[in-house]
Image 1 (spheres, rainbow, N blue to C red):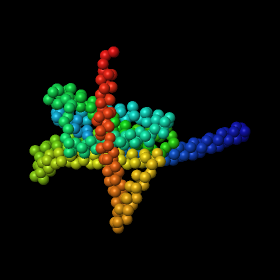
Image 2 (cartoon, rainbow, N blue to C red):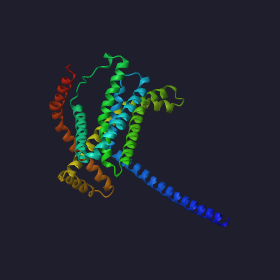
Image 3 (cartoon, rainbow, N blue to C red):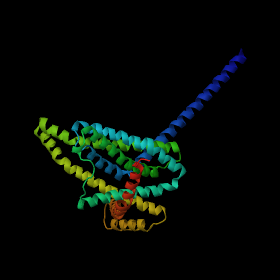
Image 4 (cartoon, rainbow, N blue to C red):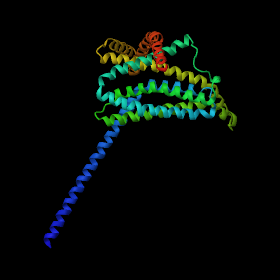
Length: 336
């Protein structure tokens, strides 16, 4: 009997030891999970912030795709574009980005520079169109019925989003500091979902703001509420122009900085060092906010370089790449 009790006591001791080990493992797992989650969130925040210029431009560009369509269809159209954007980012671009980083990481810098050059081209083209307006050769709203116009607008918006999303995901991938493939994937997924929600949530607010303002001006009980509604209606066109201008400036700044940083990575440091030296010299002339002055001058010079690069690329795109693309697409459409 005493032997059985001793055996049961030993079993109980082993069980207590095992439980303690499980508690230790659980505690360690919790700590690691918290650290990993913190690192993932931190990486996602840093990666997303680097794509700010593309995000602003995306939010500024998208509202044009609901222009001329019934007000009741505005939010459903924005939702369709948002779903297409999520598909672009999570189903197509995220796996492609992870494969690129795993098997050809040396391509990341050239692709980033290519994306930065595209941003500079887009920004410079928008600046050029301020002085040399261009005509839109696409189908006019009155030539299509509402259903076909909506379908065409959504398809066009998703194609544009694919290019902007590719830039966002590439920029984000370059900023992730993780050794694990699944953490990289999780960070990219968080960036994709967060930025899509931010962009298309903002777009939904922008496209419905004038309707809200009109409603307030009509049914507001207080004079100040009605005045606020009228102010929103009158102010939205100017506000949209401001958002577009900010988006253009952000594209030039981000695109220029990406290309300059890529040149430094490839070993050509002259331009980056010169801009840094000028920014530091400017910061030394002020007594306060020197860090802000350094950033502002750097961003401004990056933007000037981006504008110059964009203007240099416009002839190449207009007279070489686009004609080649049209010719190739024409051959692809011809029956065999």
